[in-house]
Every structure is written in C-alpha cells, then in structure tokens.
Length: 140
Image 1 (cartoon, one colour):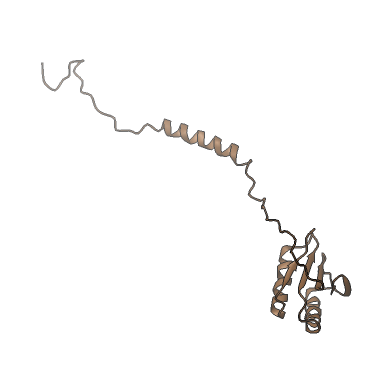
Image 2: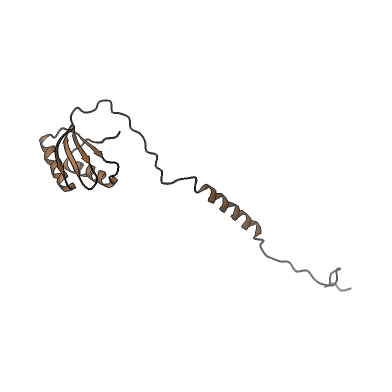
C-alpha cells in the first residue's frame, strides 16, 4: 500500500473552496417580499401638519388679502373690500399704499385652497419687504 492513496479506492480528496449562496438568496427573497408588503402601507405624501389654536387676543383691525386662483386677489381692512387686483404686482403696490396709510395694522392672508402654496409664500415675503412685521394666515 502506498501512502499517497487513501483507503477508499486509491483516490485523493480535494477540498472545494466555494461559498454556498443559496441561503443568501433565500434571505434576500424574504426581505424583498417584506419590502413589497410594507411599501404600499406607508404613504410618504401625507404630511401631518400641526394645528394652531386661536390667538388669545386677536387684532381688532387688520389688513386682509384674499388670494384667489388665476392671480386674482382683493385687499381691504377687516372685511371691507377696498380694491381688487388682476395680478400680484398690482396687489403688492396696493398693499404698500395701504401700509403707508395704516403702518400699525397687521396683515391677514386668506387663500383659496386651490391656489399654489408658492403664491402664499411670495405674498408673505412681499409683505415683509414692505415692512409689515405681523403677518397671519386665515384658516377655517
């Protein structure tokens, strides 16, 4: 008997140095199924906005801007409509004139729900540029 042959038929055994990937594939498939089930449940488009309570002492008089779709707007003092404007530049000039007449009045912006959020933000920014320090948003 020679030393190079083994006891089982004379062949020498070689070791296989391979990674068994079948368990990894099983784990990945399970994770894929879990993500496919959980993804429709979570809706990333829903934003939970905080609610604001009523202020303790609302102003008696204020400048009110009502923003409407298609760049239409009206401006007045405490519900008394003074002017209507067809575009935002005209509204800004009317707001500036009204603020010069009544510099101590705060501004209340009420916007239609179909209006773009950007138009409301631009109105707030324009009011801050004019010098109005107190700006509020009307809600239901």
